[in-house]
Amino acid sequence: MSSAGSGVQVARETSGEHKVKILLVDDTPENLVSLEAALSGLDGELVLASSGKEALHHVLNYDFAAILLDVRMPDMDGFETAELIRSRPRSRQIPILFLTGYRNEEHLFRGYDLGAVDFLFKPIVPEVLRSKVSVFLELSRSNAKLKEQADTLRRQAEVLQKTELRFRSLLEAAPDAMVMCRPDGEIVMVNTQTEVLFNCRRDKLVAGNIRTLVPGWGFRLRPDSGEEAFGKFQSVERGVEFQAIRGGVMFPVEITFSPLRTEDGVVITSAIRDISDRKLAEEQIQKLNANLEARVLERTEALVRSNEELQQFAYVASHDLQEPIRNVSVFAQLLAKRYQGQLQGDADQFISFIVESAGRMEKLIYDLLDFSRLDARGAESFRRASCDAAIRDAIRNLTSVVEENHAVITYEPLPDVTGDLIQLTRLFQNLLANSIKYRGEQDPQISVTAQPNGHEWLFTVRDNGIGVDPQYGEKIFGIFKVLQPRNHASGSGMGLAICRKIVARHDGRIWLEPTTGQGATFCFTLPMAV
Image (cartoon, rainbow, N blue to C red):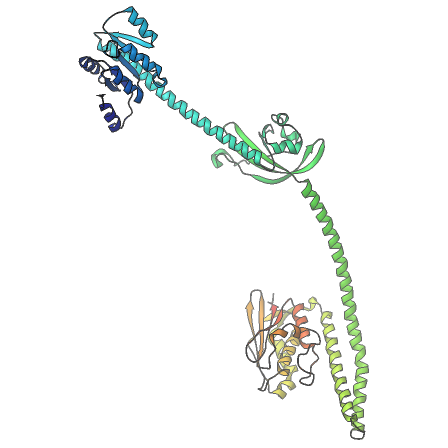
């Protein structure tokens, strides 16, 4: 392929190949044609120039494997052209072959002085011309390949250098001491934190052995962690505790191992952290926990003793109070029977107050005694219990109250639970009695249902009575809490407190469900039977 003048530019734009170029410079068109014919068939692009100026223009824009330059040309001869070509750094190394028809030693000396690699004398032998140009074409291709390889190596070196700088920066920025070493412990690289942690200069650490810093150091690669299985990366092992040495003094450290398989073999990065403060804190926490556990145990034993004493006191007090209260009630009733209507003024009313108060006090003492007895039956008395049987017994115990108030009690088949049948009967009995006691104008309608709720049963007791203001939903479960006036309905205020204690002893919960309209709804949970 050949071109001349502006045709070179056209050829450059349209050609998809990057062939090596040869520049042919001669002011005689016939000579250019002759040169082009002699070099046709070579794997190179022939660029033609008819003057020194045109040749310089091409040299500014293209790289050439060689320049065939005619010595005798008007305006600017070959030597002047070669001198200008050599003056430019880009074209200084291009081989120049002078073409001349005269064997003149002065020309030869001047040509070689300007950097000519050879002289070809006219008439030129085509075979010799082709042979020499072929050599320069091959040299140019080899140089291009070498340059490409050098550029590739340079880029790779730059990438490696940047990677190494980035790695070193990350290593230096790490908050822990970072030690890179061989599997045998030979230290390859450390960061500044390592110097600080072990109070030792870097030049003394590198090439030493990490076991001089951490005697028990060791990391064993897993048998199945070969490169063919996991590539270049091995598994990471975190938080392994060792004893390290600093200035002859042992101190605890925590090491995270991160092995990496490289071309030079396995390198293990050990991130070493001083855990002296953490160990000291853990010891202090253990001491505090031990002291706390001892104090909690002591307080618990004191509370258990106090609770037992209170239960014993409540039992004894309520038991011993029954006799004098019963005497007061009996003698007050005798007074009322013998002297009713015979005494002056309000005597009969006063006697009635005494009898009523004595009866209420007797019931309070009975309920208090019953409340204190709940803890006497421990969890060892719990077994599979039928709630159907418990509610039937409760209704039977309330037969006279149910008939007197024309109460209607309905319940679905109730499940079995793990508990104390006697206490479960008392639970249902108190809730039913509470619904009947605080009835409305209509006959009491009470329904009892149960449905599964996770690992427990959710029971609901719903009535159509006067209801409870939601703001008293917690207060009503307290001891001796009665919301209605004493003359409205008789009650000791212990019924719902007993219910809560029974449910709590069965690991359940009891609460008043907020409702709109008439009636009250009590809910409680009991564990399912095992």
